[in-house]
Image 1 (cartoon, rainbow, N blue to C red):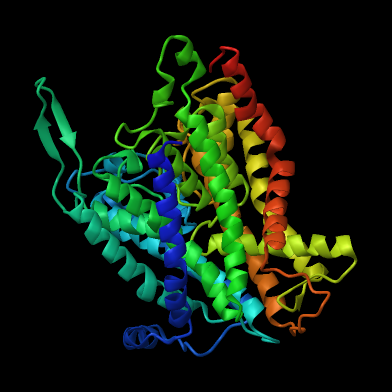
Image 2 (cartoon, one colour):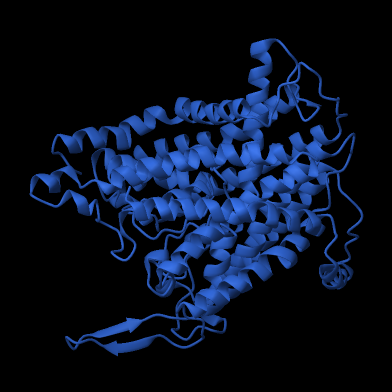
Length: 565
């Protein structure tokens, strides 16, 4: 790492850590109903919807409301995509999407995955981008925040039969956080040169006399929530590598900050609501340890030249620049890749398939670990809460004590639900990858052979199950097989995980809290941070090491021997 690389990483961490308690305080007051200006706005919304915000729900009622709301969002978005050719704001007269691609895309944006098996500028009208995709960017992000709030209340409340009101949580997350935050970011991005218009595409004549179509449109408004809501779905096919979607070094840095800021702040909300901010800082410290480790490894690998090119006389100081923007370079590209896969965002400013094998393994591993390294907005917090339950249950068994967290006893029911939720994603990843690699339609989508081809498929199903949305590149995913298989994987990774989380939270909220004693395990110190980080790595390693060994690890060994794929 150069001095500039170290400065960039240090500045990034400093801003995130400084913003965490500030935004955490605001979010705590927001979801406690203490923001005066918001009350004036939300009351008419509740009245129009027939919602009683003070009437809280049992976890099962909360789950049903969440599932019905997201089903309605899926059906609406699916209809928009299928009718795109007859809807307004379509200056390029783009046709409607096929049924399998519309299914995949609707599932993708409703689940906060934002996987894109299409090129945005050549497939989506302005209406589809704004009314369809961007709206779901807000709503899927708000859903994740709402589930995180349920888990926070589960530990903060004593003997409560209710866990909150889904409609209230969604309204406050959208109107009090995501809309104003995205508006501020969008204005800054427009200032940096990002387009925000409804003009038809421009046809320009190049110096060689060729005709080039330059796409534009309402880009800034979608990119702002794409990053703040950890969605990742780009307006353009090249995503954040496109100069219109990421015009400057400042816009790149701002987008990286937006990806982490809400997820980090939710740890502080947890600390404030359980009346012990040290608990939130311990969780954030665990996330940051894993994050920095990933950045250092990926950054170091990509700073070195491809060994085959080095043998041909390439300057090792240039690093591995294949698939990267010259204006960002190797370290900033690696930093962006680690951030986006640690946070379930899916935006990319470099092609992960072009990373060296071990450099590309880090983004893949980040998703495999459950994307709990800050994670998606809300999803990262309730994901790491599952590992906290599992960690303390294991620790309790090791010392022969009944495990507890913040005075709430963790018993067999909570442990079973946590393990069930943790195993959903690995099951979907490994089963989906196995099916794709032994069927003709699955193999037809591969660009590369050998371990790199395995990584392409493995990354695709990992990204779908982890609701990340980034792609390894190379996999031709716009087929009936992959649109269907990855769509089902996204649904499992989102909702098959959320329901056990809500069930676990409902049980914990109903429990009485016992005061801490001399025998209680402290959950706010370095020992807890290391134990939690170790559990995350061990679970991920035991689950995915064989797949990683057959993919990026063996590719690294073969590359050193001079063989490529």
